[in-house]
Figure (cartoon, rainbow, N blue to C red):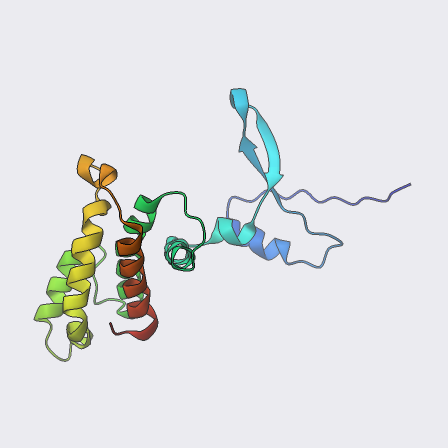
Length: 174
């Protein structure tokens, strides 16, 4: 006879579920309900860390995995992640100084015009590098542009821009 104790917990908030999964139970198996054929539901394994990851973290991981040579299903997704990752980085590095409503090119324009004591002034040595990355990544960013979703992407060129992006994030310089 096997003694099985099960706890079923339903959460709308993945972060709360993440805390629940840390509880010292005999075995924490976290599953989620997902849709399968014919609109039925089924249980499947749930990777809590993946489910709760921010877009910033997902974009960073996607670029790092691509640079590290891991298989990537869609080069267009990697190319799109470059711009959103840099925008997220600048929002986090300069909270309150980078407006949420501004596009990446506009942020670079603000950097070029910044005067002390505005902390964006300290990004001016990166302005050319940010412009070059924006010019490249901007080709793939807008999904309403047919050419952006069908444009050829060179693996080596994309890897170069992904590396340059992570270098800015890790070192704060080109």
